[in-house]
Length: 292
Image (cartoon, rainbow, N blue to C red):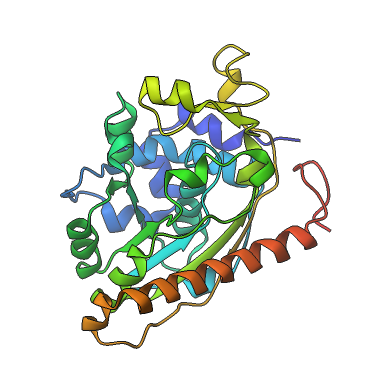
């Protein structure tokens, strides 16, 4: 049975007071501070109950390896991308806000296309996301923040259902960044997202006309009225966080294209193996079943 407690706080409490009560360490870290990239704690607090509802009550996310994310200092989180819309980033943000010993935000780097969307672009900045650029990533890491990257890019969220959990080739830029900035990489494998909006096919011709990265056709979209076509299926999620990878190369090795490409490929295969293992051990698809 779905627990609606978190959503009730949207109307029963002041958002900032609610966040302070439920995640005091996270609140204290960012309260009263300005952010160069548009993060607003008020916006985060307003939407946090929604994402926490999906995290705890709807998807019932199980997380393994949370201790592998360092309590302090910079890190680069990378993983497989899925779900048509980036709900996977929201679930990792909930992991860091409520499950980690030292709660803090993850600054996900997003493509310019998202920032051009009315309302959504401003909302994504106010909840902590930043424009994907090398300069921005380097500055955030220099400030000791955690950044999040999906090296599959937009292609990852647009995968068809038949290609679910098949990791597409990683763009190696995250390895170059890690070597140049001397930052550990934390691989994350996530299952659940590829099934919440089963993508039957992509209509590429319509996507080109509308200047979209893809135009999905799901069992609900575009056939059913809003908001039914953005209502995800109650799929059980599992997130496996691996130990940090420290690339012990001098910064100048960031320009070694073969080295960077080979390391990216190795990490891609590592995440694919994790996904295969999680899928093999999964005993239930929907959240109403047993963990096994």
